[in-house]
Image (tube, rainbow, N blue to C red; front, side):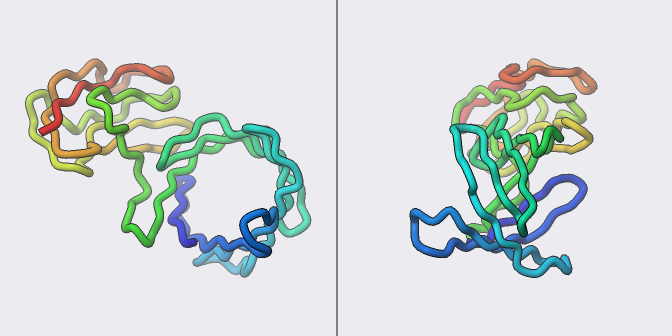
Amino acid sequence: MEYKISISPNSRIVDIDSSGGNKSSQYFAEIQGTQKGRVKILLLKGMGNRLILSLNDRVYSVIIQERSPNSLSFLINGRAYVSEIGSTKSGSTTTIVASASEKVTSNFPSKVVKIVGKKGEILKRGDTLVILEAMKMEAQIKAPQDCTVEEIFIKEGEMVGKGKLLMKLKFR
């Protein structure tokens, strides 16, 4: 399956396939735009949110911190990353889409870079609501469906914690 994966400032199309059926712990990834060719990924051990992986015979400890349909924050050998993931076959972009709730919250601690949606503004599905920054990477929070911005609970430049209410929307 092909994915567009962004770990700022880089964005790549990655084609991942497994060998040996559904129970396989062996995968292969081809990363477009690099000279790496086909990368062999072995899942050596999985324990809830912790994985031990081998990529081309180098071992990595991966701890998944936060997961949403379009993003993943994780530690690899103690170094933090936030990745935005979109399937290229469904036409998704590498942005985070707000949940289907009328309340938009932060999925991770971050800084509010820009508030795009204004109070009372009518937005279409996929329009940007707010841009957050974490670990020098920006994440665009998009409207999950056509809506009106009812309330804004944040200010540009403000630091927000995980779960902080950012906006309230009214779906049309």
